[in-house]
Length: 110
Ligand SMILES: [Zn+2]
Image (cartoon, rainbow, N blue to C red; front, side, top):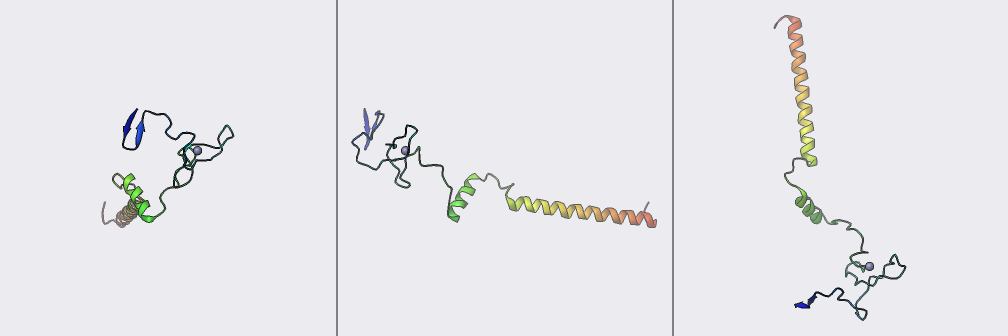
């Protein structure tokens, strides 16, 4: 067995039956209470703690968004801007076409 600091490496279960700490206590498939050591935050072990509920603060949300953003081409703002630009472009070309049709009808251009 290797000892690094306070951690013993090579033993399968370092919290034995006489371990005095808080246990998870979740109901197992066997029907008994889970004996794994509990996390400090939620009182359950790593197997019974449930999924993360995500960041709560604005700073936390910003941090996650920043970590998952590669180039920002597909953010809501950029997508909306592209749609507005495309709409302006369509309107411009439709008006240009109407002007061309009217000029042809009036005989100004051929
Ligand atoms: Zn557990």
